[in-house]
Length: 598
Image 1 (cartoon, rainbow, N blue to C red):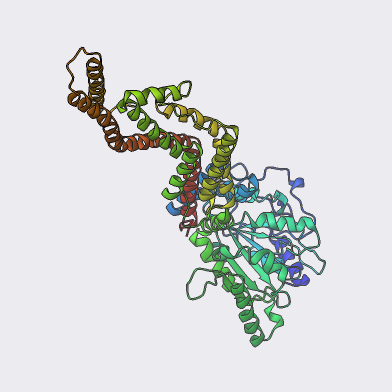
Image 2: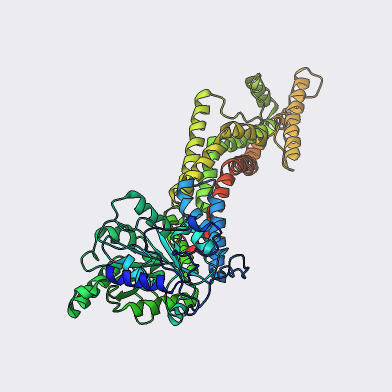
């Protein structure tokens, strides 16, 4: 719109305004004095006169029914609940910076839900010289936003609302009352966009840092965005890399407008539109062609008005559907889920396999010497059997050798310092191995949490294993005896008695007390001398089976004690961390719509 046209339109506004009305627009719901509402740049759009206005602004002090708040549908509400649960479960494992964007999405979704669901907030964004402010004024029907050759022209966001009840939404954007306006249009045009809140943003490539900060802040809060590009800068890398590509998931609430087509011949316009669509496709932005969900691409001229009707119709549909706000929140959730994927997505083999658990228990059993203890128990049982069933003379000799030694059934565990150091190293190696197995497929934060849980649980584990090994060892004294053992003892006693009787008989014959008869006493003595070792040898063969079972039972008890201690101190804390991860992964899968591990 030319400066002369702007002046003529302002003259028309001033000519039709009531005599007692101030020359500047009053902000809806603002109770400040009139002198505080003035904006002295002369570019103010005011409501039309009483005779031509399609809808009168509510009188000062009048009460109106507040607009209904925004309502999210069931799937979106479930995703938001899952995201909130995910953030809560992850606070102890992830840093605040990692969860910052997800927390912001939750806060903004909650804040937007409390506000009007009958209004749609649309921002017009563009580069310097793209004509976005001119397009903003054309849609509003009045020169609300300043235009000109001076760069940057728009210094702060300007809001234009097509209906009442949007004050809270504009407050959320941080736009002051002096920058809030109403459109100047016919009743039909205003009704088409009823519920629209249009925001003119500063240039996103402005040299002023504050202007770019305004753009970045408001773009995170609006329901939809109109990106205005011109034939010269539509392929600007700053636009595509900083905004369009990161916002590719927001395609359904995005309109891309090629402005200033009046400067191009018809065939050039189509070529630029095709190239623009190609660039958008490379950015990952889905295009809403053939009634498919995605961004809308239009060509128009804000100066001549050519194509503006198509944009107005598109905006009318967007406002009438009243679904842009929910789609924007859903896209924000998608973006937050994509950002969080590296800290939640994992491979298929998450968790501890049964083989890893058994290997860990086996390493602990080796550390406490379970196998050696079982072998010692077996040897102790055999020694006890030999003592009980051996000849008295052999038992006397063995008693003399064992005098002052350890008791038969005792099982000393790692008596030497070198053995203790080796056992400690085995325990530490077992803990490292099982923690690496558990953390192998986990994302880095959760893998670190699993390792820390394993290391913390392993503190004092060698000492606990020593204590449990002593408690689980065989009781001191003689091992339990099988049922045939007393019979063997009696037979061995009979063999000894035969030797004694035969020897006494021979002594009696030699002394002349008994009649000479060498055959019987010699036979008795031979039976006793030969029978005793035979009984001992037979008992030793018979004792192998019970001794082996006795040793295996001792080894089993020690292995179970070591496994129980390792499970309580290491495996259970690791399993708790894995369970927490599975819970957050399920929540993440609900947010992302797929399994996190896939």
